[in-house]
Image (tube, rainbow, N blue to C red; front, side):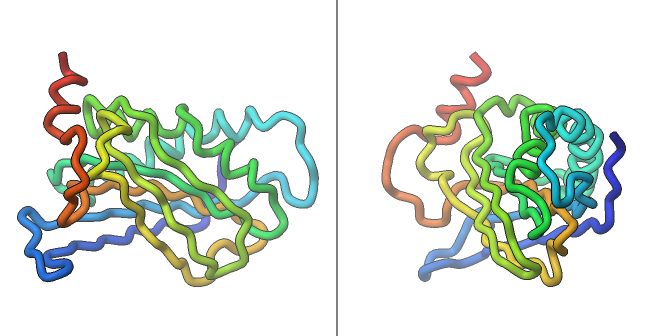
Length: 191
């Protein structure tokens, strides 16, 4: 199966100050989004393997776009999500967000091995979604639990799926709840 991509979007957010605290370095957040036509409208399909297989090419294309947008910015956190238009099923987005889709992002980042937080839902055009993120080396790095809230105008249309991957340059600004640090997780991952 070849996915029909209808739109590509990139959302960049740079936070320099929060709660009176200057962020050094700034928190850079990037959302890379592809909106695809849903091939399984208004019907139940027992096997979604063709979507999983097609997601590999989509993952490579989206990771390449992310790399260009990052322009050398290091990634410490990531997350993924999907919005399925009203004529599809939530499982259609889940089929596009498996490890097969995500591995090109891990390869692009380098040494990213941690499980990737994920969320999907059925949505009307313009509904919001919060994409959860966690550290790229270890999901237990508390300072990197975060989310990116997105509201995409006119997305998804009833016959579409919006596939979203978010990448963050650091943990939360002012994080101070303790636990393992990013550097500790990185050292453990490379040992």
